[in-house]
Image (cartoon, rainbow, N blue to C red; front, top):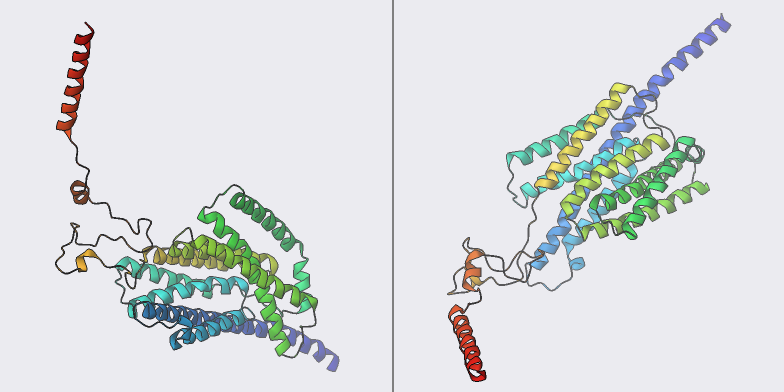
Length: 390
């Protein structure tokens, strides 16, 4: 009887273990998603606080530097707290689930703009925000559910696997081609620049998850900091993040920040999901329906973020010049009542705006009568010379 009960008990325990692991994996997914959402919300609030400190100093007579204000330091503290939350979220949930949640920061910035900056929104703006929220909910619900301990052995095993080696080969070739066209051929299209950022960002997310996962495993008692792969991943994480910031800085000098935000989100998320699927095998064991619904949620989130950033308008806190319309006794020279000075940051800043009335007023005067007299005088002079010769 004891021999018969032994195998039955073993079968029962082996049958119940996957259920426990499955429920625990969903719990880890929830923890990681909540940490990522919290981190992106706090980051959005922090950036808006720092922006508010700059605007407040620019519009006042306060001569202090921005880093000497309490609001700016409060924003910096919240920024570090948010980055810590996003960093720790990679240790709990799959990479392909955490990366698309950066759309939360775009949604939060839009809502903060309505509440605090009093931005006027149209119905299409609310529709854009609703699309981003729905897409985020769908991708969280049907996201990948694969989990493993981020030990040094597992990371090395993934690093030398043939799917990731093939992915790395293709990524290096594409990155070198883009870098050649960008640096040598001067092809500075926004897609070319941001695609290099996305390729570097995919490696950044892979290394971030490895570093965060190994730290969490070490905190749990299984020390992983003695593995060389930890320091290789850490150095790769810092290096790729620095190069990303450099390319983003170059893109910000050529294109609008809202356009950069939307395209960078789409390209970086796509490349990061691809990297997570090849390195960590995020979609291993997932059925086709869940994968399709997850990709559908990503597409909806992409569309929502693109529409939010497309509809966003730039706001200037103040104008560092005196408009003629503000001078006492002077009337506007424009038909629409705006000052002559164009908007700060535009290509025509410092010059008069084109206006039909102004061009007619200040057009150079022509002297047709003088030209006619000059032509008649030259004709009479030629006739006199001809008569003298005769």
